[in-house]
Image: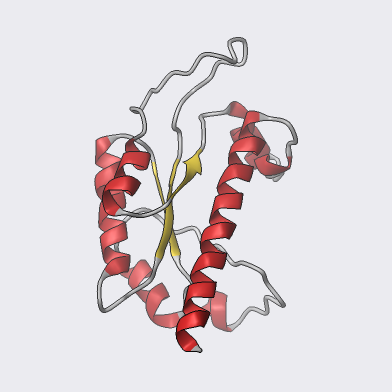
Length: 164
């Protein structure tokens, strides 16, 4: 992990997003000790077992010894919409679990990602789903990205106002 941040030249970045495995293990603690983080985003599916891990993740970042702001929670695999029935939604893993957790923990809810075959297909060919204009996946990612940027900017502004 350290090499990623100390031996690589990243140039000027607006954002660097690091995707970590679920949990609250050593890799998470190493990251917060080695890298000044603006914040963390927790991603969860809506079922209870995943939400329990997400809650632990939020709690870990909020520990006094860590104090990394949780910028929000994203719900992945929120629902499935069959391509031939665009008005139909199936909540395979439950409904609104991450949204309810965010509300309960007083953390922003950044959005939901549906189960869409196009997301998997885009990943397989190295083309981000967000670049597939006018698709449900692109729209979902755009909403999440807009909410994420708002939360980052608000956090940075708040931090700067405390410094002055």
